[in-house]
Amino acid sequence: MSAHLAGTPILETERLVLRAPQMADWPRWLAFTQDARSAFIRGGTPMELGKAWRAFGHVVGMWALRGYGSFVFCLRGSDDALGMTGPWHPMEWPERELGWTVWQRAAEGKGLAFEAAKAARDFAFLSLGWDTAVSYIDPENARSIALAERLGAVLDNDAAVPHPDEPTLVYRHPNPGGPA
Amino acid sequence: MTDRPWESPPTGAAREIAAEIAAAVPELKTPRLRLRAPRMKDFDAFAEILTTARGIHVGGPMPRETAWLEFTEAVSGWLLRGYGMWSVERRADGALLGFLPLHHEAGDPEPELGYLFLASAEGQGYATEAAEAARDFAFGRLGWSRLISYIAPENARSIAVAERLGAKRADDERHPLDADLLIFRHPKPESS
Image (cartoon, rainbow over all chains, first blue to last red; front, side):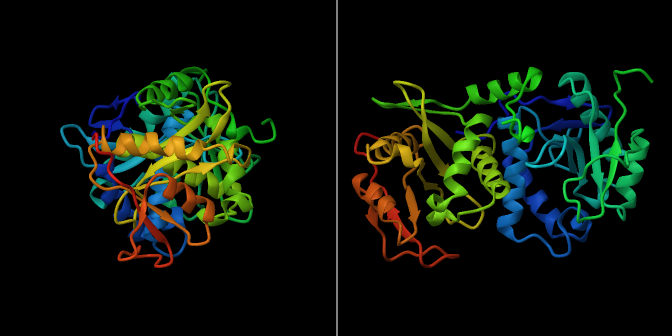
């Protein structure tokens, strides 16, 4: 029996296809967790194998339990995951998040993460019917902050954060279906 | 569950997507039990096992947040590998009794059959009955030729279940990351 994407939506943008993660994406994810580029989501040291696997399974299992989750994004005509974005809700976080990670350096600087995150945001608000969503961002993660701002998200200094002992910015996203 | 809003079952479109994924998970039936796709509501029972002394032989007791990582990871197999963890309920009244994972995590040389049951479900042969169904599914529908269970040497109840299933200790093999774990090898049923 092969792995499958039963029931999970596929999103398409001008340049990208977004789909739920599959086993074939695991090597790309693992490489990302060992790379300096993932420092903002994991702390100081590269993730050990078991932890990287747990993190991958967490993202994928959420689809089955919550009915939403993170998409990987690939260039149209390719099935090579460049990164991941989507609505998710880890345990004990104060509210649901729109997250993103860019796994491959080659995917940077072309607006691809913006294009993917915008599609995932629209899915959360317009298809799932969310009325709000935040992104939690490390204050030193300038690239992620720039993406949040490009999406029109604004700082919400009153919002609760998942880990009060860690410096975290909360960006709140505009509802693309709501009043401007 | 109002004190834990992040454990709320999905609603609206998300509920429909979750139901579609669950419908793709094969359901197994035994005389007394139904093995079905796990759902959000089942997490409370899973956490009851792994966050208490009951979870001592399977990596616990662990914080609830860690149990959630274990739960989502076990469920993710259905999407990633085409096999994963079932929730086990009693057909007579729908009561949730425990969990039956076919599970292959990073670092394990091969997939394993596990069983995690609530204290209230012990002593009635439920774990053995559910594990038999999952074992037959692995050898039959999945076409596997090998199936093992990794068991902590102090976990006498789990060893007893493995032996009731006809599994044999394979003392010539060791788990590469944890040499203390016992390896029980399940016999391939003759019919498959």
